[in-house]
Length: 249
Ligand SMILES: [Fe+2]
Ligand SMILES: [Fe+2]
Image (tube, rainbow, N blue to C red; front, side, top):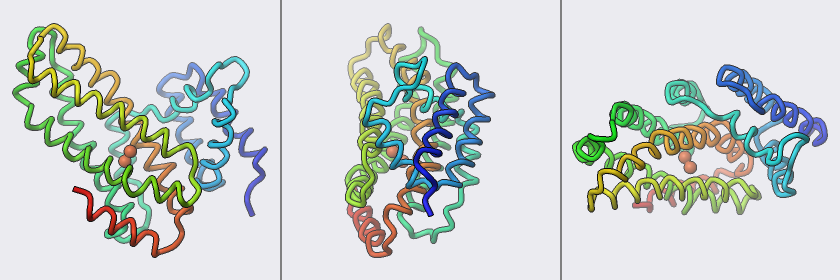
């Protein structure tokens, strides 16, 4: 039987309260608590309740926008994310669409770690040369990210929405848009080099893209993909998703 909505809401509101102003160590603890709580109530029930709360411009005392501390619970480093991805087991056959999407995430984070190492030592005066020298790696990384996003946006999210998941796919699409924009800016700057401004793109990559992508991938892996397995229960629907993925180029 579903656990009472009121009790779940209270549990997560208390986690959000704790997340306000929490440091990384505290956030890591909260992430653990969150994942445990999610395991008890079920991901589908959680995302459904959250969609309703967020739709009503959810705010809690002392905080104008509760989405900020809620989202901060998922601020995870590249290293911790990589470990979390490798230890997540959906117990699915490898041809299942979610196994494929999870493998994409693992490959993406591995490549991103390598790129992040390069970006982390770039300085203002060598930004353009350093990025140009890794242009091929950046293009390869983006090509894979683009393909993964297409699978999610063109096939997976519409199937989730059809199965009743509200709000969240749209939030994830908005985040994808921001990811794409950072790369669009980087590629257009590479065509017309303007070294002064170019460093801003490097900073954006390090300070905005990497943390936002880690947060996004963690939420998909631990919240939305498990919820998807509950929203889309029929084998036939997953076969259709698998077929849809095979058409994405
Ligand atoms: Fe995504
Ligand atoms: Fe994803």
